[in-house]
Image (cartoon, rainbow, N blue to C red):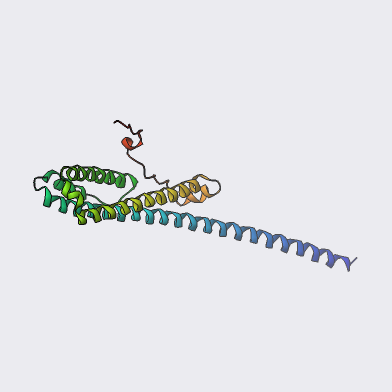
Length: 198
């Protein structure tokens, strides 16, 4: 009997050690997952900020191009001061911000571009000006870059927002007090169907 008792204690001790090791592994795994998920969410937030900055860079480039186009237009149409004032006003007060602020600024630039195009229509020689044509080509490239930046921003926002509401990641997001981000959206007028009239 004395010889079997130590064997029972050994088996009980081994089972206790195994259970303790398994519990420690589970706890370490949960903590590791929690930290990894938190870091992933923070990384996604940085990607959103980076893509928002990319939109801001494209909007600034677009503004600069419109200013240069206007400089050429002014040489042809000295009395087009309303357009000049509009370009100057467009830049004042703009700060890189959330998607709504960028969308409002983009809409202002759209209005200015259409005003410049109206002036260009009045001056046929301007349409043939090589500098103006070059600026228009650069503006087209900038528009494509702006569209790509918007798509990337919205893609990053989508991934981030999905992770905020998907269990169990939502638990980590809630503990970090992360909030959903807003998508970059087109203005209401641009969502309407275009009427083709001849």
